[in-house]
Length: 305
View 1 (cartoon, rainbow, N blue to C red):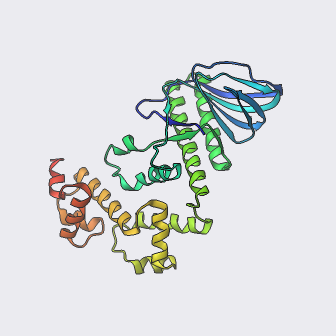
View 2: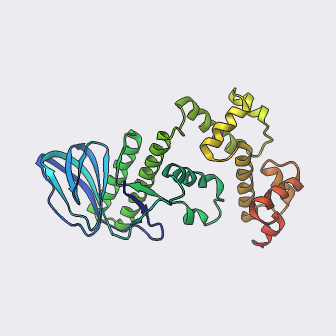
View 3: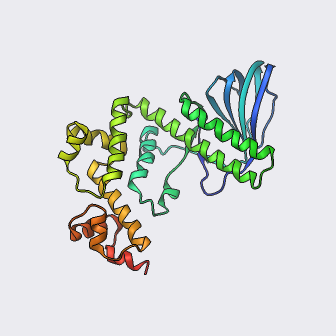
């Protein structure tokens, strides 16, 4: 399988994007595009060959065609598909490191969300959007979001709205993120890393609960009572999903909230910030803060004074 990595160093430049509908059987012409093309099937069938490899695309299928690859239709068929033409700089070749599996790579990539401070620039440097050559999108919600984004971009382009090219780039980014997340979910589901619907509901509720109650004292007993579930089991599921145990996740959440308060200048009193994010002990808060950020809250505060 060929994979593509989005080049996050630059804004994606879109040549054009639209919907093609063929009421009569259609055979795609032979061409070397000179840029990337993404096809996404809305309905019908599309029979393509690229560089000697045949593809049969059906509803919900996506394919990325290479700038220097020769592609052409192999059979006529009735089809309706969206297409996006992208400058060659939008993607860069992606090669999986030899010491890690695709599942491990995508799992680590997903866990960055919880392990990198939202106030740093590291997420831009380390989070990587990966797409495969072909992808089937079965999730109706993702497909609906795709069509909404495409329709917004098409409307802006056809009516030459102000900054319509930026609208196209913005809509494409939405599409790219959803497709990359869809691909990641499929790979991890195949590795039995995903959960049943009931487990997913519990984990989503638990995450929401932590984000809403981070400023309160929380114990394992509190969580057991709230979710009617053994804490050790709950913790194992949560770590499997996020890569982080519950209370390590909670500490990171609290410290990030503390950074926000320190940076905003709402208060300069460390004990007030500690209590506001769920720590009754100012000294313990300072210890956790320094462990996570590399500096004490007082030294961090000096950066904004």
